[in-house]
Image 1 (tube, rainbow, N blue to C red):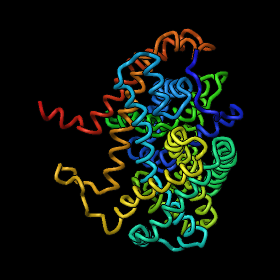
Image 2: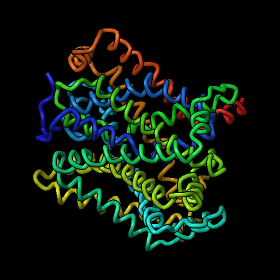
Image 3: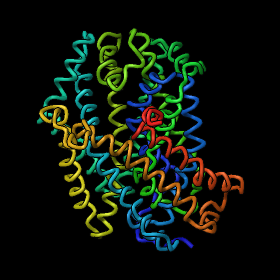
Amino acid sequence: MAIASETTNSWSSRPAFLLAAIGGAVGLGNLWRFPYVAGEYGGGGFVIIYLGFVFLLGAPLMAGEMMLGRRGHRSPVNAIAALVRAENASLFWRSIGWMSLLVPFIGLSYYAVVAAWAIDYLGLAATNGFSGFDAATSQNTFGARIDAPAYQATLHGLFVAMTVWVVARGVNKGIEQASKILMPALFGVIIVIVIYGMVSGDFGAAARFLFSTDFSAITGESFLVALGQALFSLGIGVGLMITYASYMPREYSLRESATVVCVGDTLAALLAGFAIFPIVFASGLDPAEGPGLIFVTLPIAFGNMAGGQIIGTLFFILLLFAAYTSALGMLEPLVAWLEESYPGKRKQMAVIAGMAVWILGLGSVFSFSFMADIKPLAFLGIEKNFFGIADFTVANVLAPVNALLIALFAGWVVRKAVIDEEFGADTALWKSYWRIANRFFVPAALIIVLIDLIVGWEQILEAF
């Protein structure tokens, strides 16, 4: 039998859960990172490899993360602690719960910085502020706007406050209701931009770029980046799926739910490519521009094309919606844990959690102004400012390590009887693949990613 419940929250329906889960997964990783990463690492060949990793490795790992959340039926910290006791496992595994709290806490603090830029650029787009932009003007504008500490701290605080407002209302009246509105709106907006690209952009060039299969452009690094992007995009290891699945009724299929989330997340990523690249190609811009694609390159296109004010406004609404739905899932693990410690005080706990996130995030906000040259860990040879440290620690260390531990715990520690119960409606073939994937394939892939991200294969080869 499942572990006794300590939470009274539950999704009102399976579609409500799936909308929230897809909203949590769909974020800046889809709309900001995927297009420029695809551009840098081989276009269509990269996309095919990415899709393979999403469904062969990402889906089984996500199903495992959901299983732990539903089985524990609490916040990540207490869910994993309960599972450790039930399996009579080493206390070491409780680190999964704590990392599933720490990762979204730190992650949201700097994620909200980029969301604040989206709010800022939404205002610029709506007031036709990109009109006549060239490369130099766009670069200088972006640099000047992020180098405004008080202004950016205010926007950062506004985004965090917006997130707190929804999470404070609870799972059903807050996150679920917001997801029911935001996710259809998000896909509606992105489809409008795609249709615009089909009519006014170079849609053929975008299609060739995304789906041409010139594998001669694929390198070993392309495989590693595709694997990392697949895990990053799905939001695995950040505590979100454990938390959302803890409110998941037992009749919902874990396999089907994980598959639907992967499909929704992947669809958003591909649609983002079809929204962005037709505009980029039609404007004669570089699709492999890098992180500046969204805030430096695209504003040039919006400022010099027919209907650019409207499309630019819609685009930054889309970016903001994507960031917002992910932020809800990043704040919820912390609030759920605090609420378990202080029952009946969810609103107060949401405010406290939001204040903590905002205060921690100020270091990242100021990393683009007066703290840009401050390198807190320079004495260790780490030449990164506060934002860089937070980003690297979460994306390259804590989240992958936590995902690795989740795979190992689900695959090796959780008893077969529990697996059979949780995946009761699924075929023996699926359960066998799920177990093999979480025991061997996923850990091996994550170890490779960690080695590459932290050490680098070139350095390893040089050592020999």
